[in-house]
Length: 251
Image 1 (cartoon, rainbow, N blue to C red):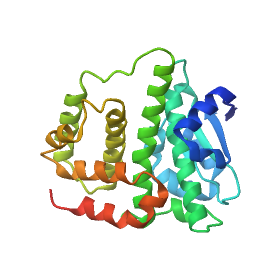
Image 2 (image 1 turned 45 degrees about the vertical axis):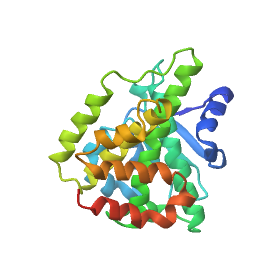
Image 3 (image 1 turned 135 degrees about the vertical axis):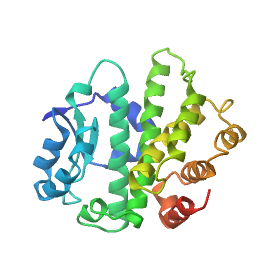
Image 4 (image 1 turned 60 degrees about the vertical axis):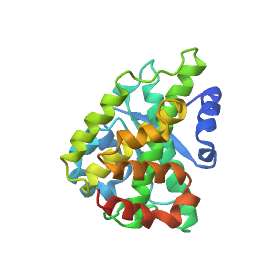
C-alpha cells in the first residue's frame, strides 16, 4: 500500500462537503488489491472477507475500521482507479463519509471497539445505519465531483439520460428480491446519486417530478424522502426503525 497525502487546498474543499470528518483520524492508502490489503489490516476478519471475496474484488474504494476506536481509520483506493479526472476524488469523499459516520456512532454508543458496527445482521440497527450511510456517502461523493467541476469552470450537467436511468433502474428493481440486502445496498447508492442531482438541479428534479417518476415503486420515493430529511446521525439514530418499516411497507 502507498499512503496518499491530500494537499491543504483539496482538504479544505473536502471539508466544505464533509465538515464532520475534521475530527476523525484517517489514513488514505492506494492499493493494487483492496481485498488483500483489507485482510492485512484486519487478519482477524479474514474468514468473513473471503466469504464475500467477489464483492471486495469489485470495489474501487473501501473504509477499513480498525479493531480499536482510538486507532486511525484506513481508506483504501484501488491504485488503478486513480487518474487525472475527478472520479477517484469522489470515491475518497464517499469513503470519508463512512469514516465520519462510523466514528460518530462509536462515540455516541461509547464503544472502544468498532467490531459491533462491522459484524452485523440484516435489519439490525447497525445494519440499517450502514444502509443510511451508503445513501449519504454516494450523495457526498457525487456532490464533491460536481463541486470540483464547477470550481474548474465546468457547469454541472444533468446527464441527458437521467430519466431513462431512473426508468431502467426501476425495471430491474421491480423484478428483483427487493428486501435482499444486496438490492437494498444498491437502492441506497442509486437514491443517494439521485439526491445529489436534486440538489444541483432542483428546478428539474422537484418533488412532484420525483413522485411521478417513482409512481410504480413508491417505496423508492419514501426511502429517498426519509434519507434526505434525516441527514445527520443525530437525527436518524432514533428513527432507524422507521427506515426498516419503510422497507417493509407494501408497494
